[in-house]
Length: 298
Image 1 (tube, rainbow, N blue to C red):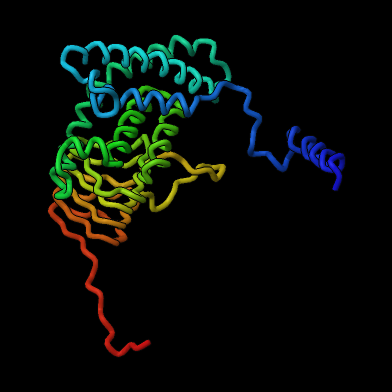
Image 2: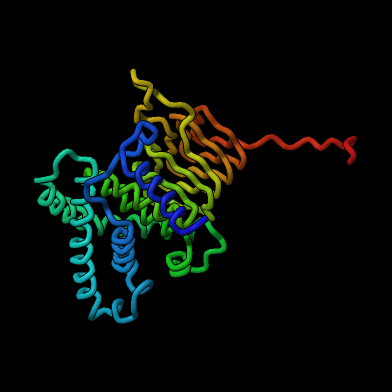
């Protein structure tokens, strides 16, 4: 095929792809400002510098005489970057965003005021990792190398932004962590203090999940929905549909806890369990022992 023939084929596809068509009914033409993933990744990097001083920046930033200066610089940078991204988020699906710049500014500074609380929660999470993982040698090791800390940081930031009414951006932030760690925590999940994740790969926590204090989850755990509620048009409705996990609960690897059920405090859910009913406090739910068939031969 000649170059002219190739260009002709390309031209035909340009015509097909450049017009609205019933075949593409669910892919709208997006003509509004969109948040930047790169900018949101930068915001999360700067937040790590503030929350974990000295770990991901320079030694000078963590010195007693300079930490206030660098913290101030970074908080200002977070505000500047975030208010712009919030503005884009507010405009993302809105009919008009003429008044969104002031609202974005108000939300951004409200979030900055939440950062000390986020740091406190992350401090309890680091402690929980130390308490539940015998392989953890120090808080520094947990902060610097455990993917769960990164995933929890992203979720706690995204959750606060969601509570402040920010659209789109919270989900982007948690998906950044999901793609890097394999840990999928929806920004809507409510998570208490001293939360620990061991390993974490393949862990999924749904958006209406409520998790208490001192909860430990292992890799592959799913806190998911059992079924969905639909409206008159047959579309799923966002109603509470994920589990409530009370304080001091441990859920081991590959357990699936599904539906709006309650796992009572001080309970243990064993690995590879499929659980769709309430569990009272102080329970142990374990998989039945495998039965070995000695008559089977290959």
